[in-house]
Image (cartoon, rainbow, N blue to C red; front, side, top):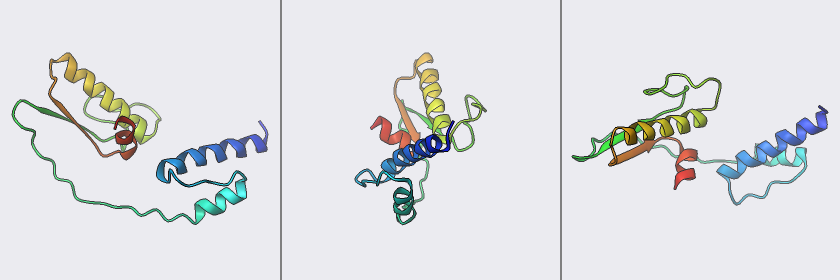
Length: 119
């Protein structure tokens, strides 16, 4: 595998990641121009305290946090990203709910990537 090919693959990956956070940004094609643009981006991170609330009667909540490999149903998914772990935990949790006749399910996640995929 050539170094040029590896740089191209890394550049493509960076383009994909940046598009998730800055969908309207047009990144330059070349590595150095792309790097300079990404280095100068200022992404504002907003945070707010979230307090878990009990669901209404007749409903259940499915919460997951894949920050370290998933939990609750499966403790370890192997070497994967936190988003992969969270998506797998969500899928398994939904299966468990459906297999147990739970249809009034509120799914909560802290992953904006997973949330944007489903919304």
